[in-house]
Amino acid sequence: LVCVFPCLQIHTGLTMSSKQKKSPLLAMGAGCIAGGIEATAIWPMEFIKTQLQLQAKTKGAKLPYTGMIGGLRYYVETTGFFSLYRGLAPTLVGSIPKAGIRFGLNSVIKEQLRDKDGKLTPAKNFVAGLGAGVTEALIVVAPVETVKTKCIELNMPFVKGFTQILKTEGLAGVYQGAAATAMKQGSNQGLRFMWFNEYKRIVTEDGTKPLSPIGGLLGGMSAGCFSTLGNNPFDVIKTRMCELHNIVFVQS
Image (cartoon, rainbow, N blue to C red; front, side):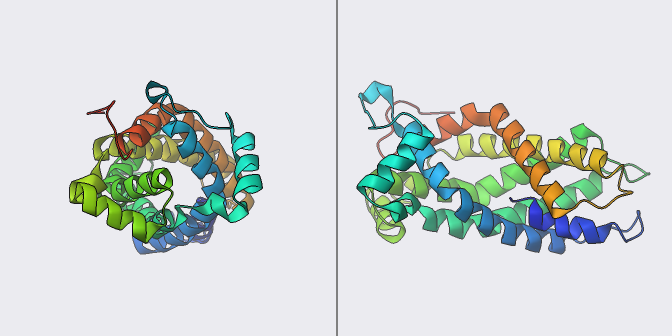
């Protein structure tokens, strides 16, 4: 989903001269819109995923479900459909600038890495995504992910949960797990942009054909699957480190 709106600026960019640079501001604006849509659409699955990751066996915790479908069914039947959106507010607030930084900075870094013919290798696409991912993690994702995880664990809305975190742990509690988050976001975006740009190059035959929004959707889905398989261990560690009473992990 997060690739559909940016594909609109890619589509219009195909009518320009191949040497004309695309505007980072256009990429940033498209990314902001896409980020908000993405966060809202996938939040119920993100909610269940976080609950499963918080189920630390060392603490003897047990959930009444063991998978995604069972978790969705459990919350709909016990606390209602809208309980699946608990903790969405901090993620939604953070997703808009996060996606803007991701696509805008990625566009800037790619322009700096192009060769004299304007081409990029998969390795350079990975570096551009890595730089954008680490930056968005340190500026936006680390505090938002920490507050999101603790709000879900505390079963509190955003404002009340954020106040409770500041009261009990101080500002440092908001940035708990920042290193693991940076590792997760950096590797995630590096792998995602590398895959998606290679996919786009093949589908558009090196930019001679436009990439449709549906094509962008399919490319984004495959890129998301690829990047998740590559960096899920970082995601699990990041979630555990963001817990309210983390006593298992000290460093990434």
